Amino acid sequence: MVVYIDDIIIYSETWEDHVQYIDRVLSKCTPINLKISLKKCNFGQQELLALGHKVSGLSLEIDQNKVAAVHQKPVPKSIKEMQSFLGFASYYKNHIKNFAHITSSLYKLCSKDVIFEITKERRDAYERIKHELTNAPVLILPDFELPFKLYINAACSQRLGAALHQRQIVDGEPGEVVICYISMQLKDSEARYEATQTECLCLVCALEELHYYLEGAVFEVYTDFTALKSLLNMKTTNRYMLRWQIAIQDSSELHNEFFSAVLKSYAKHKQCGILLQLLQQKYRRSDLESQLEEPWLKAYKDNKFFLIDGLFYHRERHTSALTVVERDHISLILQECHDCPYMGHMSEDRTKERVASTAWWPKWEQELG
Image (cartoon, helix red, strand yellow):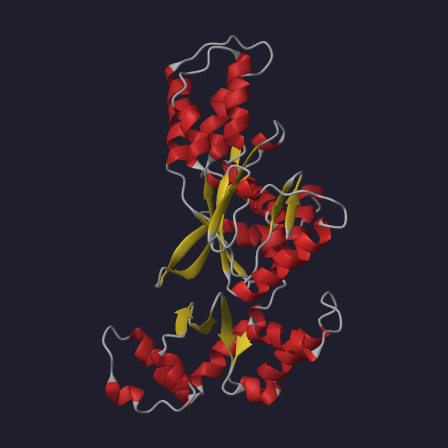
């Protein structure tokens, strides 16, 4: 449940849970004589409008009803009007790639000792932001059981940008989707950095800004600067470089060794070898299907398996779980799900729920009882 001032949003994975949650909330309202206007209530919705966004269980997009009014407005004629426009646009900056770069000339116009003049560059920037607001991509909610892709861009000496992507199954098709964009303006001292140092700063800022997505997650970083890796490994007494190296090392000590081990285990597993061939085929191969054993065969026929970066994932409702086949890996996952320090000591049912959203292996439910 989410409460914002006088708005209450109740969400759940199943209809049964939803009815139960609504009943709990309403039962709390009665004793304190809190009245609810049924005209303003919507029950059992697949999506809703909230705080200027259209929200569903899978995605987040801009409420175009909010954008429509701004889209009809002419170019601002004063600093106050420009500040109002930029304040509105920046609310949706996570939907707009390179927002800081596009709006830099407009923000400068609002600075002290700058004559308010709408040049062609500023007019173009204003129109582009309006276009981006209208055509912004739908942001897909992250699946924390899948790896992320972090694209960083410091091509401009004054501004940094990054994009967080993920490969997911959307509308039945695998593809790369946008989780969010971030961008920021450099300080004057930072603007004098060399290109590779700026790229390094961009990575650090992105890790800090997106920590609630990336902390504890597996992700790959994509950059135009191949020298960045050597820069992060070099010995240095520069206090900024040392801070950046520590920040990035903290984020890079992930589960890469575990995922590499899982990947290697597939090569020794007969069912995984057959499954890999089947998933790479455009057409069905009955000769290969006949070699699959249960429950691999049923899961394959039900379209449960998909490949991301060579790893098998098993989808179940709204979650995707990594497929593991070696006993050591299974034991490690069971231990992590049951004894994870930040989750507390969980009950048997809670442990099963966490395992279901983390990993899949044949007959895991029977094994856990």
